[in-house]
Image (tube, rainbow, N blue to C red; front, side, top):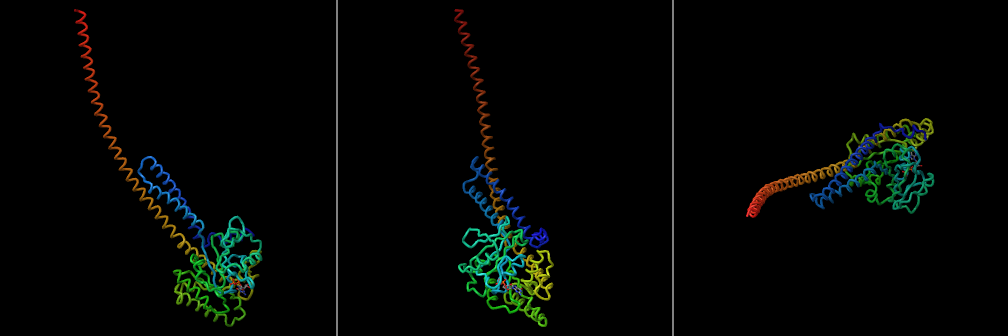
Length: 418
Ligand code: GDP
């Protein structure tokens, strides 16, 4: 791939809000980890020297080491997650491929996705897939093999296949966006399980509709359940296959306004997840297949319109790009809030707890030091007293000896004289 294509979404991308926030919070946690380690070493030494810190306290400090390490691990894995829903064949896989700028997920007749497929970035240029419950990395040699793997009967519809695709192949993967494709909402009765297993941590939901028909009850029901379980989910609606409308230009505008009105009503009046203004910014008319073709042409160095399917390509292409921009803004802001707000308040509480424990220990050390000083003073006084006593005794002894010597001398000289 040409270099320019690899990093075309530059640092002006709204996704950078998340990327930078992630780097910053990781750096801060790196510092907290150092601080926790240092403090624990200090506390352990303090315990060994003088028993100012008890066992329970030492254990509490050590528990912070593990807590911070666990948060750091979660932080490194945090990503932005977008999940796609809609009826079979509305074009969910095609939308994901168009956004990834490459045909990664199999799409089309005979390639119905039987299970959940997650596409995420891999490091080191490797492409592989992993099925649920297995650590084995299955090499992805080509799209056909991937398609066959995904069509296997034995895959349960609510199980997850993770597709790892080289980060450097797509800026969205590089910036930590994870895509989840779902089986059609028309084929499952286990919507509750789906939501519990795959949706609760999604930052954005994309409902892919077929612009050639109206929204079905199954599609609506799914999002009703989602919005019962999550407070105000971020939902985008793509009216896909809009290229088909080019065949009927006379009713294009009326169909568009009818769909728009229904979609806005659904988001505002039925789900009550956004107001009219926000909802109007969440509904788009696109052609995923055409966008993907255009991008494949662009990658070859050709002009994008070589991928056009029908009249009016440019408008649909712009609309897809507009969707991507709004999607990027929404997902990065939402992910920063949901993922990092929690970590930052936990970080604050860990450092707050440690500070108050250290203050407490410091107070105890001060009292201990004063006590030692008092003891020292007392001892010094005693020593001084003893010294004076000793001096006096010594002086008395000296006198006694002196007197005795004089007495003996006197006695001796007297005896000699006699
Ligand atoms: P999914 O089952 O929702 O994942 O749908 P797919 O992405 O597999 O698409 C089903 C079929 O519709 C494929 O043959 C696609 O090429 C085709 N398709 C998808 N998007 C469009 C589109 O915007 N316009 C047209 N004309 N065909 C599309």
